[in-house]
Amino acid sequence: MKGWMSRFKAVFVLSLLALVLTGCGEPFISTLQPKGEGSQMLFDLMILSIVIMLFVFVVVMIIYMYVVVKFRERKVGKDFMPKQVEGNHALETLWTVIPIILLLILAVPTVQYTFALADVTPEVDEEGAEQDAIWIDVTGKLFWWHFEYRDMDISTSQELYIPTDRKVYLSMTSDDVIHSFWVPSIAGKMDVNPTGNTNEMFLDASEEGVFHGKCTEFCGPSHSLMDFKVVAVSPGEFEQWAQDMQGVTGEEEPESATAQEGQQLFADNCMSCHAIGSNPNKIGPNLTNFGDRTKIAGVIDYNKENLVEWIKTKGKDMKPGNLMVDAPYDLSDEEISSIADYLMSLSPSDITPENAKDGVYQDSDLSSLFPEESEEDSEEGSEEGSESEEGSEESSDSEEGSEEDSDSEEGSEEESSDEENSDEE
Ligand code: HEC
Ligand SMILES: [Cu+2]
Image (cartoon, rainbow, N blue to C red):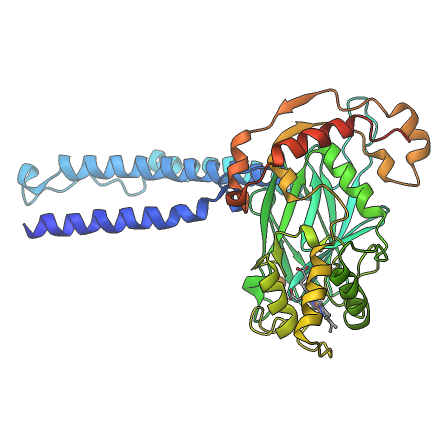
């Protein structure tokens, strides 16, 4: 009876563990469900090493069980002396060579992939011409991430939009301490350093989705709250998003009267640290498309109540140690409310994280987004993405906020018809 109980307990604990640990497997933040080239390579290496380890484990266990059974004391007697193999050349060679071979099988792809993951030379298309590479300057800050699209006149923070048909290249530094950029579902990790050296990596998402990112280098009291997102949308949607973002100056007049009031208050109290439009990297996050964020400050649920609370308390308890605490403003509740209205109205583009849900994969030509080179390219470059492939629909369940799932379906239908003629100029 006792044995039965303890066996039951063991099974119970194991099932509980299995249940709890499945929480680590959310597809938008799991290395075990790779959705990008980089994470796929790392996943392949994991599988390879697990297979090798399992092979060794199984072989050793089989030999072990065989010996235990075959040479039991009851069978061979107390005084049995096994055959002595010390100095046996064949055996010594065998158990030296096998591990060497196994290590080589592990080492070759590992080294190969290490170089492949560090390769940031531009991709070429079928004709061998270099694609316009999207380079993004990434800056790690206490406790948020800033993104500038090089040559494209776009700045944004916290949520990084990328197209699904190509790699984007990141050039990465830090403004304060060492942070580490990690989007488990689509890429490996990369440290960002404040010492002047720049690290480079590529990022690529094979399907649409809102992928969650984490800072993985301990950087201060709110290190564990330094979350960000990568929003992977179809190339057509990315192109539209980028065009919409390029136009923003921060002077656009919001619709409602309170938001207009908020705009003025924001300019007076917040602009010293925050920017709207493609302004240079500031002390605080760029808020150009704050209205489309999935979270406030990377981790806080996005709603007006929380936003008001954030502005009122300067994030003191919501994100301890954050650098907005020193902001000198002193505002009334009404003033804060109208600032919140203004910030939530900032949505220059119809392309939002909602669009990352429709999972349609297609190629397109993004040359019109690069002002300098676009002139000659755009003439002959206007054949639109002909191939299109069904991305996996299931992934749509995985995103943040799918509970409040709205009718994004029709919205995206319209958008994709816009894409057809979006690069006439
Ligand atoms: C002293 C500089 C400073 C001032 C002034 C300042 N902020 Fe901030 N703000 C920051 C910093 C730094 C962060 C990033 C905090 C973090 O996430 O760690 C931030 C974050 C935010 C966020 C979250 C941004 C995001 O991308 O999710 C909002 C919203 C915000 N501030 C609103 C305001 C408003 C409104 C004002 C004016 C009433 C203001 N801030 C004034 C520095 C400042
Ligand atoms: Cu960090």
